Amino acid sequence: MTVIDLGELGRADEQTPSPRPPRSGGRPLRLALVALLALLSLAGAVPGPRPPVRLAVPAGPEPGQLLSDLLVRAVPTSAASARELVAVGLADGRVRWRSPLPAGHQLALVDEVGGNVVVTSDPGGEPESALLDHDSGRVRWRQPGVAVPTRDGGLLLEKMEPDRIRVRGVDPGSGAVRWSATAGAGTLGYRYDDRGVAQVVLITNAGRVEVRDSDTGRLGSAFQVPPARGPAADYTQVAGDVLLTDGGPGQVAAYDLDTGDLRWRTPVDPANPFARACGGGICVAQGDTGTRVLDPSTGRVRWTDDRWSPAWPLGDQLLAIGSGPGGDRESFALLDPATGRMRVELGPWQPISTEVAGGRLVEGRMLTVRPLSGGRMLLGELDLGTGEVRPLDVLPGGWDFCTHRGRAVTCWGAKSELGLWRLPG
Image 1 (cartoon, helix red, strand yellow):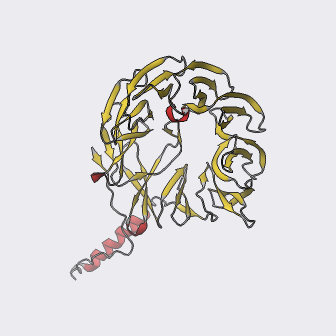
Image 2: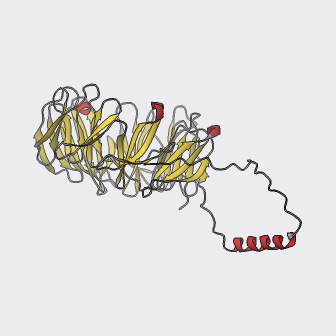
Image 3: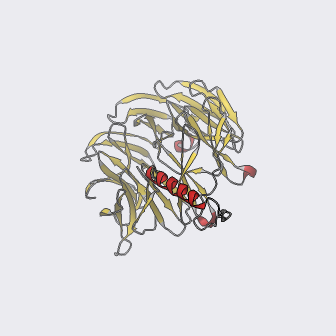
């Protein structure tokens, strides 16, 4: 086990003890040698790593959302209760465009599809989605539903109603409906592959399941599972190629999404009936902090751990969350997915939020932070090969949470302050 604990970066105002004064004998020769070494050092000097650059952001009461080259956030306007979206370029911090939000709407989701920006906003129960031109912010179309981009550049609009669920596949450029499906009251789930959302799964409270291709709507399979003891959204979850659902009191059941066959059942803690995808396995809660990791094909236990709960796969490792010494704070570690053996404990470093799809991190890099004195935070990057953290810069000011995407990092503070940094390329 390796424990990583990098100390604080040295402060510029720290005093260095003065060296002992040199003897007078040989002083000219030593000074000449020092000058020569200095010249040689300057001639062969290699610039150190460049720190992140902070960019100015328009003030607003909410955090922004990062895209590949834009930060989009909602800000108030001069009109009473009116709000608009502001897009800030991540290359230089300049405002690219402004686009009004419908009256009474709150920004919910921002994503990219077909080179443009798709935005979901909600006035309080009836979400709408709109496609905005990437360069100008002009609204091309607006429709009811929550936007979900698919693996092949398509777009789904999902809408949950008290008596039914609806999903439509639309052309991102025009908003024209390509296909649609409706089922009784229930919920929706998504099956992912390496490129994104591959299938949409409609699950009704009565136990009817339909699995459809996300881009064509073609029905891949349809089957029946026992009705849940409550809303399907609370008792079902798509995890890889299985549907996890209520298997009866104190049990969870796994059904094959391609055939509808029951693969296995396993007992769960009635007080903590928690099961989900975690990398290539299924994680089931064990007590207050522990986890059992199951084989999704057979339901057999691969390994158990009383401290660590796997969160996401990182390369060929699992990022896990557990309690720190004394149980007073969260701690993080990298685990071996096959055995659960801890490879690296990250010590005081905490990974910052990034985009997750299908239980896998979308980003190829993991950034971390650790608190410093005076309310500052040290930003670092986790080397997935060695498990070591390379410090990048000190972020001044107190921040509640941070997110990152690509070469951009944003942090949100308690005083409604948003910090935006561009990482060196």
